[in-house]
Amino acid sequence: MERGRKDRAWRAAIVCLLAVAASTACERAADSDSPSTGDLSTETRGNDPPNFDDLDEARRYNLDRVNAYRAEEGVPPLVLDESLNVFAQAASQQLAADHVPHKYFKTNVYKCKCNLGAENQGAPNGWRWRRVDVQIDQILAQMMLSPGHRKNMMNPEYKRLGIGLVNPGEDLYFTNDFGR
Image 1 (spheres, rainbow, N blue to C red):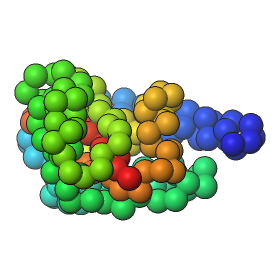
Image 2: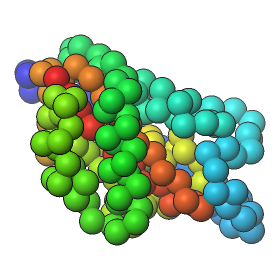
Image 3: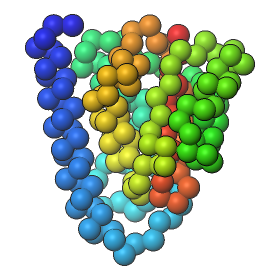
Image 4: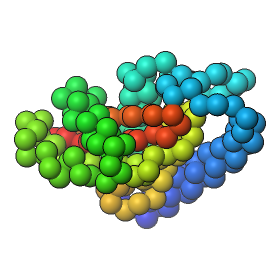
């Protein structure tokens, strides 16, 4: 990849991260007295990004965001894969239960007949925030700044994506599994 494109990608990721961080600080101040609902839905405020009522909507948003990053670098889009979704969901449930990253992947990758290639997971103790769209944006922006996670997201050999999201209370446990 040429240096100019790489520089633009890094600048875009940093600008996105700063914008999300500013938005997060404002929303946390506004929501400090509000209890968490424990589901994927949240109330809508003004021109906020979409909120999600179910897991399929959140997965679609995650897929669209990953594909937007890939498009910026000319990498073909991924398609959502149900067998990878099942695997990624189990990985997020494992992460929520024991807080050990990639444990499910390491112990089950060879049992999966889904041509799994790599896995990205969010924070082992969950990503604190109430709005799932903001959580996904923040996690993916952080992953773009991490060489290993970025490599997985941008790998043109990967054609399929499985997404696991577990949100007990206000902690989001996040897994993206990439397949060929």
